[in-house]
Image (cartoon, rainbow, N blue to C red; front, top):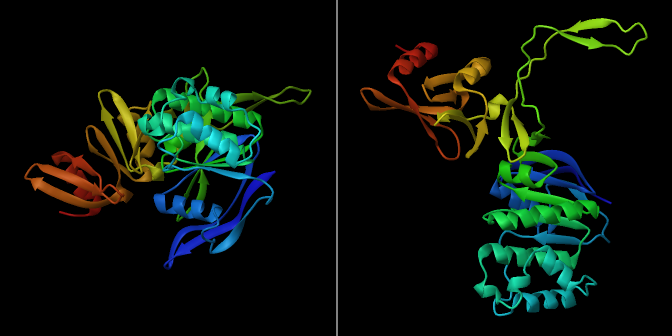
Length: 345
């Protein structure tokens, strides 16, 4: 049992939302696709049968039930939690036990409360209970952890673990890398450039370190057990930490880097990610990729700069070509360096 995107491609109004891509979502794993709102809506509408791909197809066995966990989902406001769950049990002719599901989402204390009197996070847990009562083979989850309180996020992650063990197929659609990493085993970014994996690894007891030795020794499996020298690996990705995982970013993805109160942050598509490297470390590592130390607390990707603004005689800013039109300070001394790099007087 799988859910497959086969040469899937979507155009709207002569604009490419996403080019052709292939993806197999297998049982027992959670896969996340990080995308813009427009791409996410197109994927949802295609999975719902409301629209079609421009090319390719989404393949799954028709007999497999699909369940959706939408970001915005209504409900019967004047019914209690228990009454809602009984209604959905009857609607789906489900064999699932309501008491067991209520325990899974930890709503026992709220079972006699009307939906209209619940908090946002409690309502999302009711929505999650509806999905468990439905018990589909394939779970499509839109922004499942958005705006949830800590307890509800913990419950969500616990249920996702149970669904993995039950060999369910789970696809998370989100606009936030952090959300995708927190919920999923495999994370991809889908945009006009295609589908690309976001590399993550579980954090272990050892920190990520640069390879400093000019050579390293390895032992072969040959009976002679001879030692060979290998050249150092050039590691270009920049590691950041999200929850208990390490996320690796390609330098061109980074918009700018900021250091505040002793912590360095990478800013990428409106999100910020903590990094263990200092600005000095990153300045040296990223120089070859077109990054520029524009201020004592900032490094900017010059490929992302759209405008240089002069505020006063000694005050400048760089405006980036991102969705937020981010503004990064440019110091007076660095302004002179930048003019030299651009061949300006």
